[in-house]
Length: 510
Ligand code: SF4
Image (cartoon, rainbow, N blue to C red; front, side, top):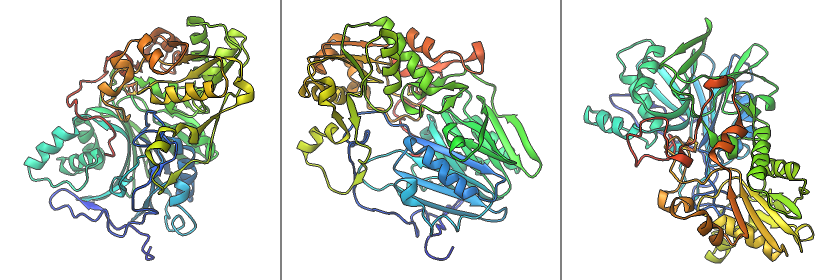
């Protein structure tokens, strides 16, 4: 590509990395931007942020278009940046930009991404400074050629490894954990790329799903506990990888299987190879994927997300029935649980809250007053539905409590006579070290307050959180049967891995 679109910024590793990540990079908006009613980070809606979504294609002539549609389907996992890297077997073509996939890719930026293999990435939404340098896939040069990496998750010991490598002379060009993995691959004693990747993966701790591409290989790897979702699909003769199965549906592909904990799957000219870089630890899929992050039409480990959420709602009704006139769910992620609660109790489900689907990014800075009212940009109460009614309001989680208070007040202002809040997860009390952006413990309302104190703080008539047992029963057992297990650390402080760096929360992209 010669129209200024091509990003020539491959990092060279390890001896003398050249920083070119910002060189020639395109972005739609380089100043500050604000998310209108969107989650987290100064956005107006107090929710947890999923960190990233990954998509990969091996052996399809239209790999970049498939990635584009795959990213569309995964857009809920990240709205800050999008990127695709393709290879025709000889060279990489790649493009990354700030914004949604549909903003970054168009008739000019997509066609030059030729080749039959590709990896792609969407990154989560933040407000504030542009972070194009953290947009993925990241592309590196190493002694055997080029390497592209797309990640979902977090390497808990990245800072420790980074300090050690820096002492040995490595120079880092980004703040991304992904670069740590690239340095480890480049420094490996093994010339064979697969051995080098395995060598690198053995040294990192955390929850991560990697897609790694060279000019002749596509490699998928999942952490030894299987914390983050990563699955494999087919489209004709081509192979697909994605964070969620809804991305396979979006491109007409079919789900094949989930990548297993500690597994490394390789596609190259010799076909498909299954290997491992680690023994499988206790399988611990992130329970929040089922509660909130994943799309309802996705299956993770053979469990459909909508169905699991509906069971959570039913269980919530069994644990905490309250006599009321209508049940409503906070859209979108709580609607399935609200339907389940209504089905179980016989109280009618109604659309008491409507989401404004057209909020997005703006460069108009909201005033403090507007920020305070931010939830109104995102949600409206349907007066005719809730006026004079006793309302059961189902939500999937309470993080700081500020959004719950605003939504309860929205319903009261619209005339609800009682608002009973039911949460389809246990109290969120601990930070996540596996790639989910969470506030510090002292900002988590459930870490600092009793249920009764939270009830008062959010102005609810009653409040109940789903129990841990209720949650586990609702999710059920996945394809691994009795071996299926879930990370519940943000509820019970029981982290499935050793936490070596308690300051290292957030995403591998940061
Ligand atoms: S700590 Fe919570 S958010 Fe993080 S992986 Fe575990 S269940 Fe998911």
